[in-house]
Length: 512
Ligand SMILES: O=P(O)(O)OC[C@H]1O[C@H](OP(=O)(O)OP(=O)(O)O)[C@H](O)[C@@H]1O
Ligand SMILES: NC(=O)CC[C@H](N)C(=O)O
Ligand SMILES: [Mg+2]
Image: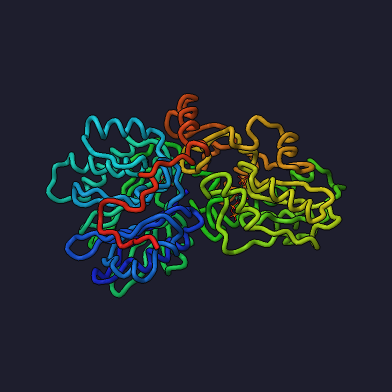
């Protein structure tokens, strides 16, 4: 689940890069593998800095100063296609036509078909295995077909409309065309989130797009709204234009944004992530009562930091059982689920969380997490609770059992890696070492999210029910994906994939 942002200032002599840099820091929880910024400076020159690492690893003052220009695009990456190579760090650039830059959050499910088309029919060279490079080339090819010397609004809208028909899957994108303007669009099902807002600056307005509203709040943008599914927005020095380009798809935002990905202080598609998590806690409390009964023997409710905190607090309130922070999080260790490789994820849980014996010794504890995916966290956590002296360990999850791969931008390509795959709740409890597991029901989860937007009739819930809203997801497709992206396959990257340099634009990043 990458994070994207784009900014165009009203003052064409200003520098967009400091705010884009700030935005990436606020989106870091969406991708920890790579970060990048491309700006459009004087005389239509593009400047980029991108590479593998956290935002703070990639950018310092020396890297930011050369990123001149009043307009730019930023990205933090969590790979879901291709590899973690430097060359796949975003934003992506293609020179023809016009000088085009794109940052992508999501995942395409017809990448092979697009790759074939770009090779055989469009005759475009694709230099990496990234699906985002395909996306930017499809857009470039559509623009090229207009045959115009300079881009205009109508041609850009038409090219994006065609892209909506060609590209299947999840994609929220922010891009720019040199010396022209910034643009953004969101896939016809609106699977991945994207918001925008404006900020008064002298006599004009700055415009910013971002994956999450927290960016816009913090940087002083107002009039925040969602880019709608199938909508494209173009912002130039002179005008802001919106167009709804495709209407026949069912809006299906990803429910996992509310469960785990997004920051609680973001509002996505009109739904406060924080409030949805309170609702999840409330509904999960009912499940606990159903499974363990009102006369249960739970002594204390303990959240698994960080994401589950909001829900766990509400659950304990509803159950009228003491809430305690039994696990202390090392604030310098990032999110474990989005780390590459199982060994790294497993070790990180121990480095990240430490159990305080005084909250566990001799007690029956109910641990609450937002989700159980591979079971990496829960397995370690349950053992840590037992080592700290817990008598019984119940484990409750704010999300239902995750049994199916994700194909729209969450790196869960392999059902066999999921702890709930082909296991009953009893078997899951055994696998993670808990006395009992308690899961949220899918209907309750959807209800928790819909409460503030009852008009959203459908969410992408594919990881829970195997129903895929976009693209033709056949068993063969899932089998190929599994072979390509299971943990073992990913660990065998080639020397070229790991090469430190990217080709293309002047790159101010130098590995330290
Ligand atoms: O079953 P698993 O494969 O372990 O995945 C699920 C866990 O991973 C996530 O935590 P993460 O550490 O990524 O982020 P957080 O600090 O925001 O909770 C999530 O919140 C669960 O705790
Ligand atoms: N998580 C994402 O949004 C990933 C974007 C894109 N598929 C990549 O792998 O770079
Ligand atoms: Mg967690």
